[in-house]
Image (cartoon, rainbow, N blue to C red; front, side):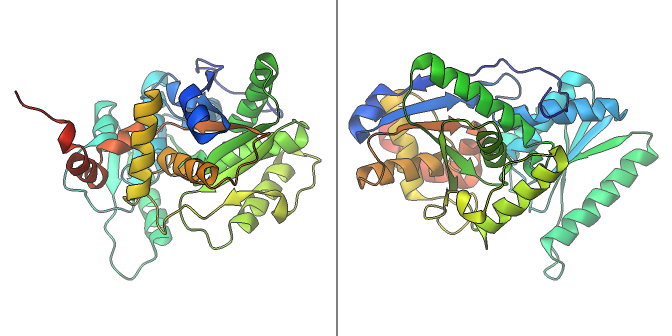
Length: 341
């Protein structure tokens, strides 16, 4: 139980915390990776920590179906489908996205796990947020008329309840850091819908954990620090927390988002290849690839203090490599590794 809320414990935690020796040596920093990509359902990923709480809440409310939202290739949707299958729920995803022309990557996995995917067509007039809201209402009504009790999970599982998943992870990390004798720990994590970052930030502040936290933004935000503060205030109010934070307390680097969400970026692909060839660890082009690209470039510029130990959380997302717009770029770049004899 965390902050008075119960969860269904289905993860193989603690996930490994590993020093990456080759990357550390070549970048001139102490670099570690927290392997949340190795969690145990639906090919793994960070959203499973949040879903432990959502599944418990859905069970308590007598739900029979889990419904969430995101892009067509949502990792959170895939993992929602996985835990739904594991715990006997139906599942559905609603996305304001065109049909990508093929059922690949997460869409393929969604279907394997029996998830209903609804792709909402844009009309050029209605804001995406309104289209999404209307579609969720329509899909919910359709399934409830069939006798299902629908439980809605927000995008990325990023709300007050979802934040508890990485509150737990911060405590888990603290124990591993102490056990391994890691000095001056500095956590690096992707910031998308912000629930993972917020869970960590909330725990660090309220549990007085001896670690720094830096987020790496992977999509444009109008006011990312202000958004973080608003999110924290909601979490603080929900659980009666004491720590007072200001917008400037949220350290989120927005220099490496490359102007869009989930866009193909050559620098990011190079960072993915580098990690694969140096450590045998696969990153994804939307989240962890952008995050490690930022770490690598900052280290190469000498902008990361040498006294810190950098711990990047691998949040999963591996199926993203197989989406058409990323895969096609990689196929061209990697063709020289293919030999027919």
